[in-house]
Amino acid sequence: MFKRNWEKILFGVIAFIGDGSANYAITGLWTAAQLRIPVIFIILKNGVYGALEWFAKVLYAENVPGLRVPAIDFCSLAKAYGVDAHRANTIEEIRSALQNALTQTRPVLIEVETLFRI
Image 1 (cartoon, rainbow, N blue to C red):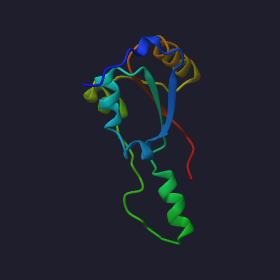
Image 2 (cartoon, rainbow, N blue to C red):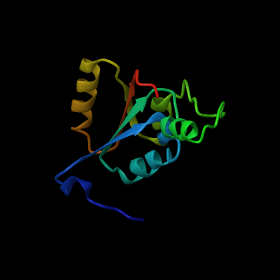
Image 3 (cartoon, rainbow, N blue to C red):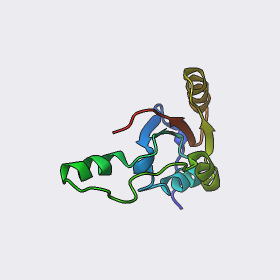
Image 4 (tube, rainbow, N blue to C red):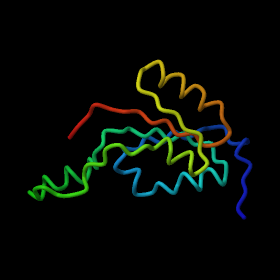
């Protein structure tokens, strides 16, 4: 099995991902957990497949089903895959979760509810 000494890497990775896009490759959490890759996943949660909703508007497609993805609990999904997860919705909670995540040697997911809507 592929193993790497991630502790020797002098930089970190912070991945900002929308909740709609996260569903395309959510199993990447499992890979990060199995390989103990110290990546921080920040899920920006607005309950919408934003890119697909925008694209549907460009194509004048109305009432496209499945573009709203409300109430997906990414913290529970992450934990099921073996990734530490935290929900953070205030500046203080985000700061605290990020500071904690930066000290970890394994993957961490931070779910942040956003107000942005397309």
